[in-house]
Length: 134
Image 1 (cartoon, rainbow, N blue to C red):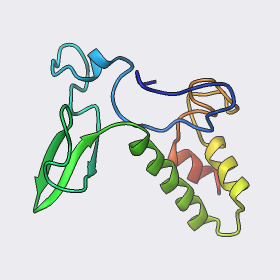
Image 2 (image 1 turned 90 degrees about the vertical axis):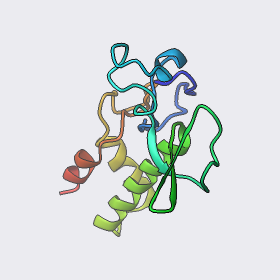
Image 3 (image 1 turned 90 degrees about the horizontal axis):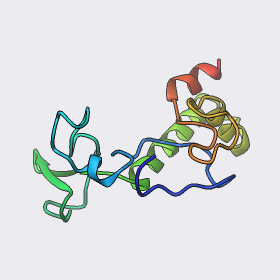
Image 4 (image 1 turned 60 degrees about the vertical axis):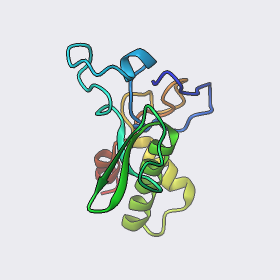
């Protein structure tokens, strides 16, 4: 869990990667000896509204005229879960929302499959979810 994460019994369905470490100090270190992925490589590389749209400590990058940045948080994790839900619906178009949710929870890893205080059913795993649909 990240240092800014919210959690509580029955509040979390699944966990998804949002970037960074469990402490602010580890998250923003640039020392390769301290952590496996130093800042900003421990964040999620994403599109951003425009060049120089991010404030410190976030890092702006422009590639072929398009703006990107290293970000973290729910805004990075939620699209991964939404994308996984869309993938399940693509593969199983007749699934109801409840079946899609259950498939994602069933394919999660690192949790108890139910309602862990920190990860809900576990961390999303797209491959396990897709394989469970066969």
